[in-house]
Image (cartoon, rainbow, N blue to C red; front, side, top):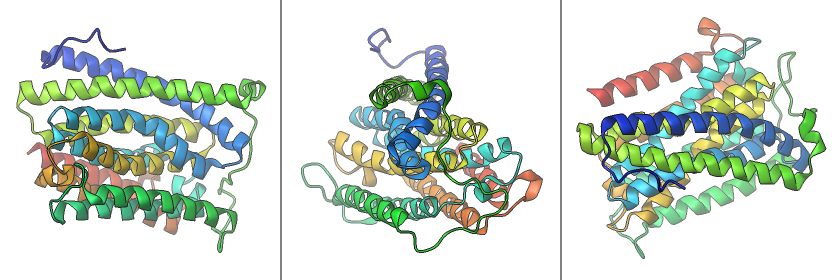
Length: 347
């Protein structure tokens, strides 16, 4: 599909052009994914929270998976690692951006959902496990670090646990006049299409988003080779922003459709899939463990993502109606943390 692209490294102008075009494809594809995903969440009975984390996480995370796999296999494991964890930081910041587009009340207040809280806990656990992998013994089995196996097992077990808890919740968030419960809605022309057609379109759009991720990963490799920028900054900030574009656009589009639970779930799902992306990078990197190839900048980004996820989880628990500057306290802290992380990486 991308055979027309010249061999890397590319001139900086070509890299910027590829970044721009691939980013545009990602934005348009993500907007379309929201409409299809919202309809599928109702038609399948999964609900916005679970569907958003599982299927939106996969669809919007495909580009990031491709970026990490391509860069790790190409001998740039630090770039692949920082892309994954940088995407988590950028995507978590997307909640604050989406909150700015939801003017009625703080987004975390309206999107009260036990499932979203549990998915936040799962994300913290997976991120901590990835961080522990970098400090564990540097051993691999068939080129794969044992932590990669543990991450996949914990992810699958967590999904089952949360799915079960969602059918028999032991507690509920207090409903208010601004709470937006996840109830089936009318989806216009999409109601006339069969479930198979909706799934087909969802997969097709996701494939285009993944293809744009491949192009971006090649552009990032060229930027590192031609500009002298560090892999931590390029992967954690530049690639991280592009990696976070699908979730950011999805969250904003979902908020504008009134699907506030889906907005938060899409971000959490994309973040969880980015941790799984590290497993893909570990498999693609044949020279050893990708966790031990991570440098101090990469571990700094990982810790920042862990810190930001804890802030988001606190916001979902506190459910502030209206905070600082029409954003919740967590929105301001998320923006400040991401800005601080970027400044540290750039200096």
